[in-house]
Length: 471
Image (cartoon, rainbow, N blue to C red; front, side):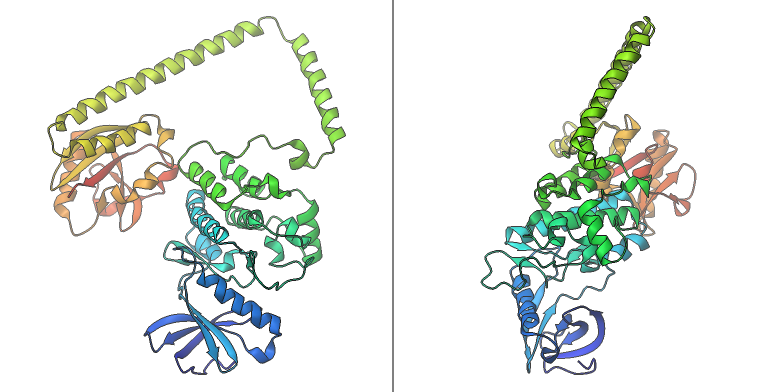
């Protein structure tokens, strides 16, 4: 179709995408006076089944109303050519977004949570996407938008658009059952989400080669560990990724919701639900007889080593246990002392009308083993100075409170001075801040304009100021 053709209702500006069934243009809706994404299909160039699939895509999208799924505006015909209009997303697709922003593993996990929840919502409507890949996920600001439901499978649909035994989707993101042309379920989309997660973490696909070679690898080859290509991937996130990529659907997360929940637990620093002890048979591709023989050898080796160990080994073990007990007692004492100090700070405001809400905030930090050293009240807001009791406990916690960390900008110099006094009073040398939307470190006696910026998720040595406006 001519890109310069004007529809009666639309003005076509430029082509922004092209796929197997049609082209997508940036267009202007003259009636509603807004920019849209216009997807068209030239009926003379396609079989009736392609036109039916295009219509099915429109019907599928019309059922879906979710923040992280592209909105359908309209479906119709221009002459004999069907078209549909969608929400115009001006951002990059998911892979480009992660690469250009050098996204951390935590940020990648947060984006995948939203995508998984959107896919779970689609599954609840009886829709399996079947073609999830980074190119079908656009980023609007920091919100992912799942699109292209042209290959989606609708449960209880009155018409079948694919033959049994036919592989549907993009090979690199297909589950083993899709490669075999078998029936797909929600777990097939979970597998595709696992491939996407693997690709974003490692900057590569787990399986490579031509179509036939890739299909054989999907069916037979064990997925290479993501940490083989990126040593910085946390173990928990690797486990989540690998669980998605199990060959058998019953061994994966049984729903995209379960995947999203485990990703949330990872981001919050909690223990994930995925099993850590993947069987040797599945992860290493060993036969049952090889597993049994290996177990026998291990038992024999343990018995031989035990016989050769010196008798004073038990004394050394006892000393180590005593040391651990002492360390645990010391840690418990630190926590109790911290809680006493937090209560002392909090009690200064027990007569304040906002005391209950303030106490709730403090209790939240306390549950994270974050010590509130001081609290001040000014201009309808409380300022809470905190630091982690044990630095590792700060990891992934403050990500939920970015909006509450103290912001520095050119419009509130008086607040800057107030914060400086607050920090100096407590002898704080370095403090986490946000300036111009970026996380950074404010150092004592340095200009706020010269703050050094870091991703504090990976650094736990600093205090922070949390601002809570009760207005």
